[in-house]
Each structure stands twice: as structure tokens, then as C-alpha cells.
Amino acid sequence: MLWPADYHMHTRFAFMRGGTERVCGRAVAMGLTEIGFSDHSPMRKDNFDEWRMNSDKLSEYVENVGKARGISRN
Image 1 (cartoon, rainbow, N blue to C red):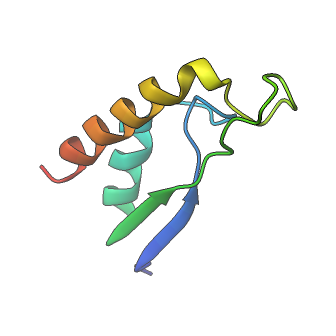
Image 2: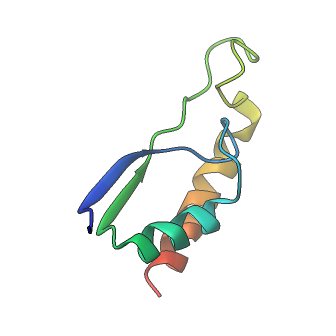
Image 3: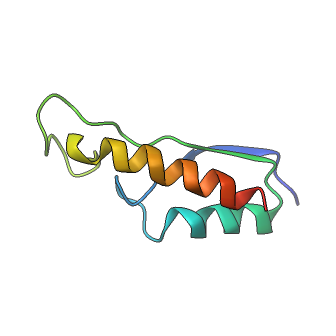
């Protein structure tokens, strides 16, 4: 069965296992037409919980997801 979209995916910046590119490749292989990353964004205090990325990783996160977006369209 093909799925139209999945908007609840995480990256290594939160708690996902595997790289962002790997997740995009798997989504394409499964036939997903769209995906959305929904990481738990930083809180005012880093290490608020084990599921959120630290604030110093936010720029890298945005760059990483942007690169994966370009990769997934190939």
C-alpha cells in the first residue's frame, strides 16, 4: 500500500536513529509523496529533556533538512 504523506519524522538532532538522507530515501522507496520533519525544537534551557535538540544545533538542523530535501527530489 502506498502512503500519501508522513509529517511526523525526526532527525538525529532530536532522537532519530539513522541519517536524514536515509529517512528520505526510505520514504521515497515506500512511495510517500510528502514528508515533514517535526523535531522537538530547543527550549530556553538546553537539555530540557532527552528528546529536544540543543539550541546550538538549530542552524545545522535547518541546513541538514534543506540538503535532504534536495536529495529526495532526485
